[in-house]
Length: 253
Image (cartoon, rainbow, N blue to C red; front, side, top):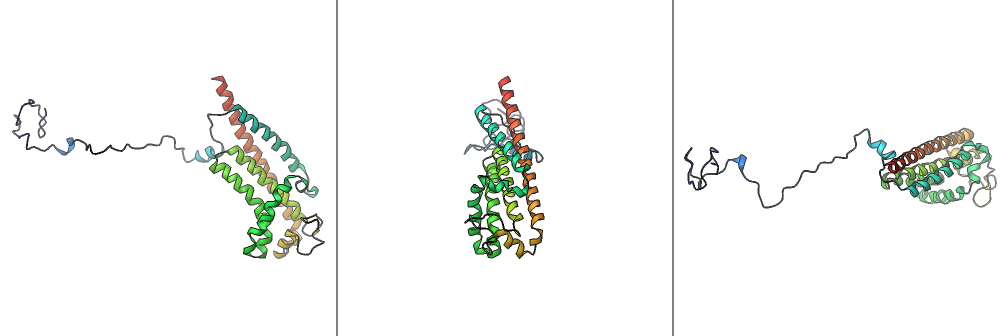
């Protein structure tokens, strides 16, 4: 045994220390050798080893490193990417005046969100009620993009969502461009010329005293859509390339 005071080795049967004279029964162990309490387990210190560096967190969010990639899953994404690439190029190449986006079947998918926007923003006054159609049309795909990127952690799906946002900008541009002319066929089969105050962008630009700038604003909206669509295609292509590379490396192992 060891003396609790001077730490000298002593026989197991000793009652007192032969070196310092302390009586073992009355001695208290020094603080540095007090045994730990056995009343409960000592919580282990949690160390996170996989926290990304501050500069790498954004890259991992938009271009994550995936170790488990399913071939069928990648093939389906590749097929969707080809569709978005070819279709997106038609949107980008079509002149604003052709109203290519408005003639596309996806316009009918966007339309309910546009009309719902009018209803949602109605309590906020006439101006926001009218503008709410455009806000609703953009807000739904933006929400989908955010949910896929942040909550679902599906960056390829988010890139497709951004493509949809871009397409909606291109869908809105001809409507803005028609503010003064009022020639587009609107919901109900009428034009802006047929019913006074029926054309959203005629009302919006008139309220802002910007009606004479309708063509300029429309082209700016179209350019925003083109830039966003190019970004979405680059982003989706980069995600798909990384997945194909991972799949190829997995097969070679």
